[in-house]
Amino acid sequence: MARSDQMDKQRKLVDVLYQRTKDGLLDWKLTPVSERYQVSFANYSIQIGERENDYVIYLVDNEGDVADEFSDDDLGSGGYYSHMKEMHGLARRQARGVDNLLNAILSELEHPAQG
Image (cartoon, rainbow, N blue to C red):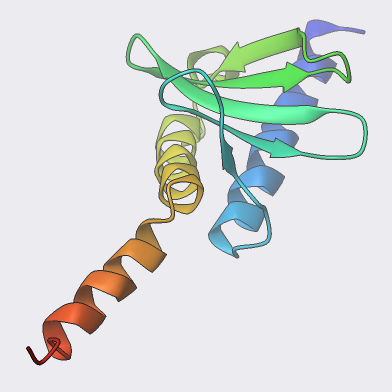
């Protein structure tokens, strides 16, 4: 496959992941690697992580091995750094249950236990 075809597919993958993440349609989970989050499908997983001021997508096969990876820098211009940074932040919030945490804290603050 020509490099430009591969890059086009990688860009499309980021575009679709970004939109589905923003829409809350993906179930991002924690991984054993710090600051790397994963969404799983039937026979593969996709991870997003941060490395040396870049955001990286990891394509993980059904054996759990990284089959390929690419960074926002590999994709060139087109807003991929900002999209991948935002997606990483959204994946982190979901995987860590930040919204539930905030709801629980607000509930306790708004309705303190009487004692």
